[in-house]
Image 1 (cartoon, rainbow, N blue to C red):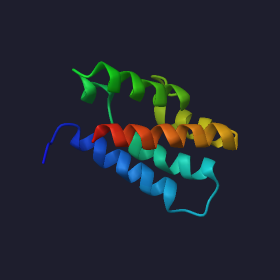
Image 2 (tube, rainbow, N blue to C red):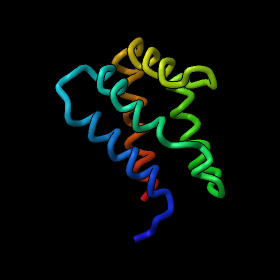
Image 3 (cartoon, rainbow, N blue to C red):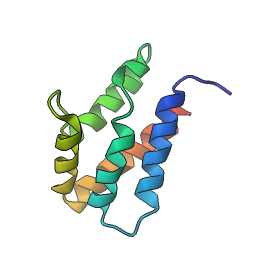
Length: 100
């Protein structure tokens, strides 16, 4: 099996499982999935500009910056509308699919 992006695939699978396996609100599920998403670094996609940009977009929608990443992503997800949270969850699923 190809080991390229193995950590990213593992973490995004965990995020998708969190998003899918809970009766909580989409915002709560997204907050819980943040831990897995934030375990991936953008450097893991060196050599693939398209994946790097798509991952950066997910981080941007979570309002992740350099200061206190976990808290900021958690707070952002908590204040998203259902539409915004579903949009991010959809991007997470699409990104996992592209990781192969």
